[in-house]
Structures are given as C-alpha cells and as structure tokens.
Length: 412
Image 1 (cartoon, rainbow, N blue to C red):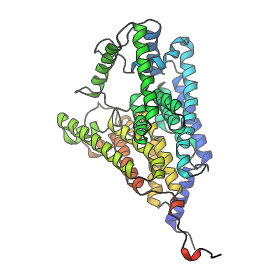
Image 2 (tube, helix red, strand yellow):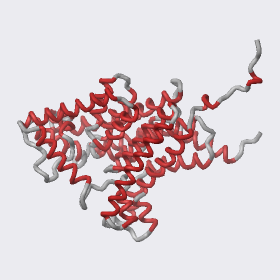
Image 3 (cartoon, one colour):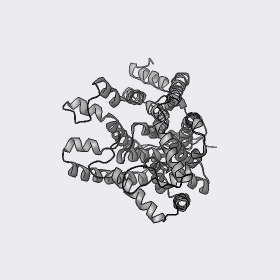
Image 4 (cartoon, one colour):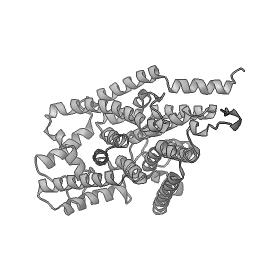
C-alpha cells in the first residue's frame, strides 16, 4: 500500500526532529556562541553580581540585604552554596563559569533524557538528541548572561534521576538556589510523596540560612525577614518583577484593571494547581513517570516570575512529548505542531518582534497581533500545559495496550 502524503510528511518531520547530526551541529554552535558571549568584557553580568554578593557575605561580612531596599534577590542559603565562587581570582571568574556552564548545558541535556527512560519500560535509547536542547536560544541567552538557571535545573533533574533519599534531598535543596526553578522539582517531590528527600532538602536550606546568619553575627529570623521583604517586593505591588512567561501580564492586558487582574491571576494559579493534583491522581503509573515532572515545570513557568532564559525548563516537557510520539503514530498536525514549537524555541519571537519594531517602550500594543506576539511565550507555555494535561489523562505505553486474542492462544 502506498504511503499517504500525510503519513510521509509526519515521518519526515519526526526524522528531522530526531536527526542527531543536525541537532548536534546546531547545538554545538549555539553553546559555543553562548560561551563566547559570556567571555566578552561587558558580559556575564549575573555571575559577576552574584559573586560580589557572595564576597560581601563570606569575606567582607557585609549583609547584602540592606533593609527593604532591593539589592540581592538570591536567598541566603543560595549565597552560601555559591560562595566558593567568591574565592576565585576575579580574572578567572568569568572564564571558569563560562566553561562550567557549557558543561552544565550538556549535563542538563543528558539528565533530561534520563528522566524519561523509566517511562519506556526499558533502557532503549530515546531518539531525541541532546542537541535538540542545546540549540535553544533561551540556553544561549542564559549562558551569555552568566546565569545560574542551568545549575538549578541540572540539580533538579539529577534529583529526579537519583534514587538515594539523602542525595535526592541535597539535590532538591541545591535546585532551590533559583526558587522559581527549584519549585517545579519540590512540587514534583511532594506529589510523588518523597517525604524523606523533602525533609533533607528543608534541612539543607535551614542549615544554609543559619550559616549565612552566623557569619554576619545576626539573627536568622532577621535574615529571613530581610529576604522576605525583597521577595515581597518582587512578587507583589504595582512594581512587581515582570518576567516573560508567567500569565499575570497577559491577564492584566486582557482585563485592564491591575487589582482585578492580579486576583484573577492568583485564582488561575490556584485552579491550575488543583487541576494538576487531580490529574496526577488519575494517571497510570507510567503516565505519572512520564508526565508529572513536565506538568510541574509548566505550572511553575506559568505561575511566577521567569525570564526568557528559564524556558530551558521546557526540556523535560520536550523529552516527554518525544517519548509519547515514539509510542504513537503521529498525525501530520501533531508533527507540524512539534516542529513549530522547536522553531519557536530556536528564536526569541517576542524579542525579535520588539527589535524589528524599533525597540518601542514597554506599553500595551494597540494591534491584536502585536499583543499576541509580545505574549507569545506565555501563550506557548499555556497551550502546552493544556495539551499535556489532556494527553496525560489518556496515555499508557503501547505494550500495555496490546491484547492477545483468545483464539490466538495455542492449546497444549
């Protein structure tokens, strides 16, 4: 029988999306570009700034939380965890972190694939290439800025892969150096019922905070209060820290009344969490293994502040979708959608639109198309969340769907 044009298109699309040589080449170039950008004299702002905060605490014994005035938005235990950077000579800092970040990118790609292997029921290779992830623009942006998102993401993914309770707890705690990233893995652990690792993670965060306070000869309660003030300024009020992925700015544009929009946002966040919990309880064991972590990553991206470089949290989502597609006979529309999502992750569409329009001030666009493009990443995350919720409720591995007809069983 001749292959239909739709089936041929789907097969060719999947072949392109899983082409290891193609994505290895694109990913290698993208990672090298990020490292080169990070090594420029005017780049690596984040690693320089965070290291300065660590030096303030570790060497100068200066509190980087001066009252309610914003200075550092990293938790005290995170500065303790990152304090080894403070002892590096300034001339080696950027180069060392750029190389480590490049290695972290590859490690994160590998760990993302490991999180889905058990869902296949065997150790067979997943067709998706690590280069698929390494080619994303959000990864290059994070590398170029000297960000710590990859460290948090790699720690969280390692916590999912690692089976030891103490080690998993320590890794969960390390993922919380970026709370907006680590929250996805804490929520995953809660829904998985990983009580012991959660207790270890909590103990590591408390220990780090106590060490931070002890070095400054200050009360741990005072330190927590100061950080809480900074966190409150970032998450609430008219000048809240607006990212590129959470839904609050989109809801504000749609409603037009900030107070009402913020109330709606909180309700939607809570509703999505309740839906996620309900769906997690209705999934099969294989479905939980494959889809629970991607769903917690998506929920986190939609709910709190995330910059564009945090789109790397979609890596476990992409891996889960690839495993699901391997188990299906994908229709052309599914293959086209996956290809379109990958193209969107290769290019910062809102940023590109902003540049092409002459870098106008950040104000609501009159054009409906302009508003949609400015909120593209938010709509993308929301759409994937809805789609994955639907798939997760119905999915079971192909081998579980195979039934042997009674008539086919030989009588001996």
